[in-house]
Image: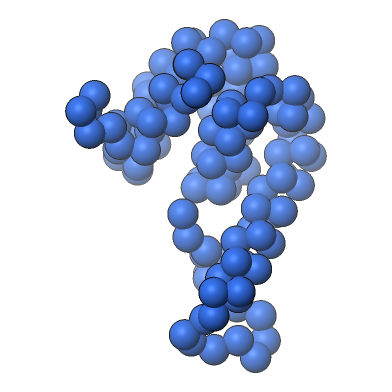
Length: 122
């Protein structure tokens, strides 16, 4: 994960190198933004178990709420507790193939790790 300086520049007066507490504050603020976006657009996401909430939040952090909302079949399956279908939809995407990588069973990429979490709940 990382902070997008183009979308949200550093606060006024902050200079490099950043302190650990500044980095922690950036991450906390970014995650707060993710949770607000998810609550506003996917009110049901908090009814998921913790693992699947983390998958949805991770994807939103990575690609933004706009792109996440394009995963209509995955989101519908997750909402309906059809987690194997949701995982398959995650892997059947440009995001998985080109953006974050699927990898292999022995060395899973981000997409496969998250899809496994979605499918298995662990």
